[in-house]
Length: 336
Ligand code: KG4
Ligand code: ZN
Image (cartoon, rainbow, N blue to C red; front, side):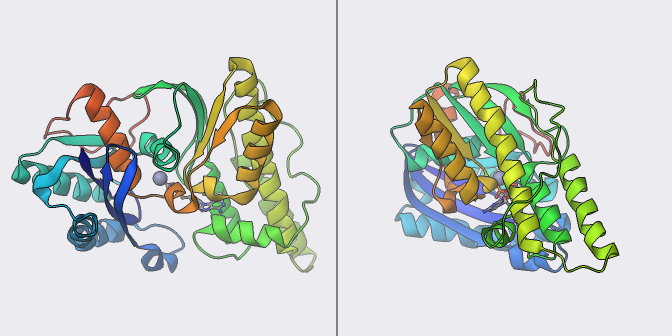
């Protein structure tokens, strides 16, 4: 079955056609990054208007590239949350109208769940149960996935998401936007120094906290500035990145050991980070368990992962009602 996926939750307008939840026939993305860059972050109103301008174009392109007409589509799936409400409403309303007009079923996808499915697209051999760390600009969730649609949240961030912390620190260090990839690049030129934080107050839990790390880094920056010393940007970036990666690895692989996990996944925008990917590969190899992460282009937001997620959830539980609202704060517990 062909599924048309639509993604508009943040600053990427995406449409994709995926076959049987595993094979990408097309995956079109219109990035708004340049529009938001001069503001140093995503401007919700601007994002919503840009989605409205781009949604028809990306959908047309995705259908054309896949060589499919709306009649050949078996399901229209769109992100219904979490995300920015204006953008979500654009994608959701568009997808519902398309489904209604073409006489096709519609499914509202949880964006966090969709990030996990980027892995299923890239690695068809993946089977459940599994453990997935989803690290994005808005979330840091350690999730046990028993089967499609069956999740248990082991841990989440108590404050900033990992990507958000990367972005804020990159801004303080005067690097580009969005900060994660720029901070990684800077870190490659530097050496990690003294750890920013020595104690881990959440060490007995699977939860995360990054705001203390971020504040410690900002204090260190102030320290250099007060002394009129040149900022060792690359070393500070390397120190910060190493400490974030250490925490992410510690939580994930303690859960792997405690629960006897045999398959571990990484997903979300921060999964594009090389040091994190290498750390996961190393720890998984040491335990002789399977590790998968999506290729870089499927780590960040895209519509193929939405289509893949929609396929499996629709297959197992049927369609969503056409009056399904957008959920800006949708968590794992709420069923879409
Ligand atoms: O999943 P995503 O595209 O959007 C959300 O759903 O939030 O994730 C975007 C986040 C941003 O914070 C970005 O800085 C971060 O992923 N990111 C990275 C890297 N590439 C993207 N963080 C660290 N290293 C990277 N290479
Ligand atoms: Zn995302």
